[in-house]
View 1 (cartoon, rainbow, N blue to C red):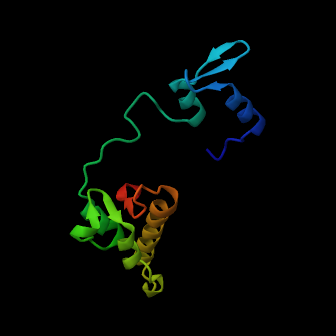
View 2 (view 1 turned 60 degrees about the vertical axis):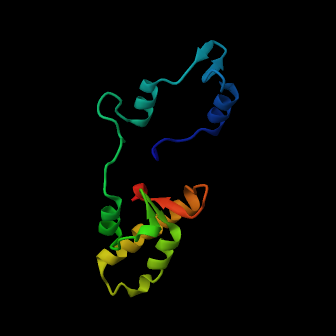
View 3 (view 1 turned 180 degrees about the horizontal axis):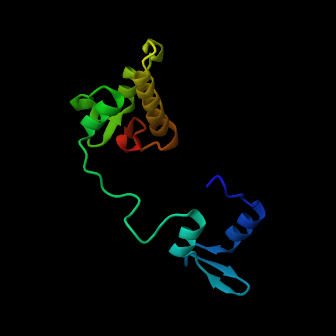
Amino acid sequence: MRYLKINASLISALIERWRPDTHTFHMRCGEYTITLQDVSILLGLRVDRSPLIGPINLNWTDSCEELLGIRPQEGEFQGSVVKLSWLTHHFTQINNHDGNLQQVERFTRAWILRFFGGVLFVDKSSNKVSLRYL
């Protein structure tokens, strides 16, 4: 959505006219709502075929080992969630990569995962992150 220019005045006007109880905009000429077709046109997303996301049936420990290079132990992993302390313990010494591009990629994935779980999408416990972000 970087190509969209945001008009602050327009956004403010829309916010003032939004009615959360009916999920519509109240304008002088009537009542309007955003349709799925509007979203499709504005964002360029298709709405008539397979969904963009859906259930994933993965072995999360295998995926974690493949993408990060280390398999979490039983107590550090549950379902698709891993403890942030496990990430911190195993991915703090980035200077030991010795020019190995694969190791740098793994540390980058781990850093992004820690950022998502510790800053952007913090859960109630504040100590776990879903591997779905990988």
